[in-house]
Picture 1 (cartoon, protein in one colour):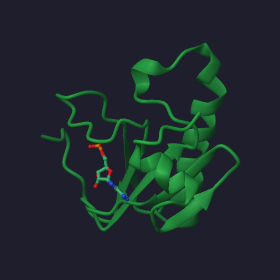
Picture 2 (cartoon, helix red, strand yellow):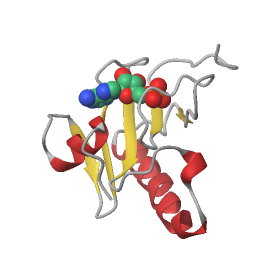
Picture 3 (cartoon, helix red, strand yellow):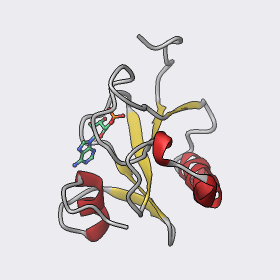
Picture 4 (cartoon, helix red, strand yellow):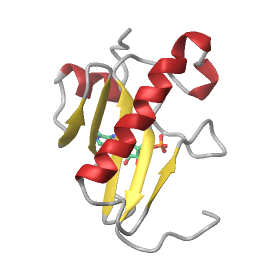
Length: 116
Ligand code: AMP
């Protein structure tokens, strides 16, 4: 359920600090330490899953909870008023740096599309 080498698992365990903005029994949302937009929040499942590739049918409800949490964060922070982007990077070419499934929630300025 938890990976002792995973930085996001350590945040879930309270072993390293993070600015937590929202929490449910199965998900956690905290501010990105290196923000790429005025608002940059990461929403993660508390249990360790390396990437979307590791998902199976067992995780369908968890992924629903993950996006429900992302929506709630956006509403709580007022990001839905001007809009926001949700991104899930998977693998090397997408630039995935942390091998724990996470949804980036980006907002606070016009966001270019497509991203580079
Ligand atoms: P990705 O490239 O999709 O794997 O995104 C990983 C994100 O995690 C990057 O935007 C990092 O800035 C962010 N990050 C890495 N370590 C931490 C941390 N300890 N607390 C908050 N955000 C982090």
